Length: 94
Image (tube, rainbow, N blue to C red; front, side):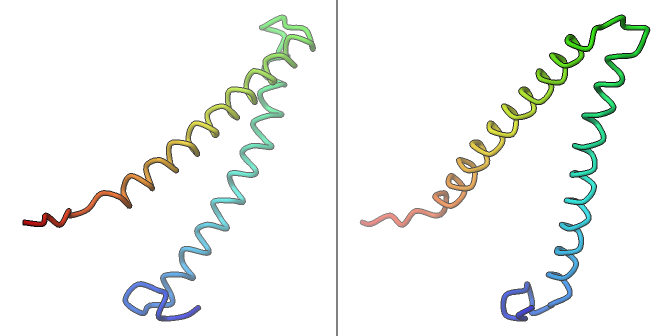
């Protein structure tokens, strides 16, 4: 890591962020895989009396709503980043 790119010249900061990002990605990927299988099994539980087709529709609805939320989050984050970049002290000419 380049010390000039790290805050206050501390290269350990970048290493820490990299490790946190890798751990976050690992656990979120596991969460996606695990929850989808758990949710289908949960919907097929005898107490709910759902068919395989109904459980599949439940999974489709889950992933569809998940995808829509991700799209909304990404589009809003892009607008927020652009808004923050434009906000700043304005120079007034007299």
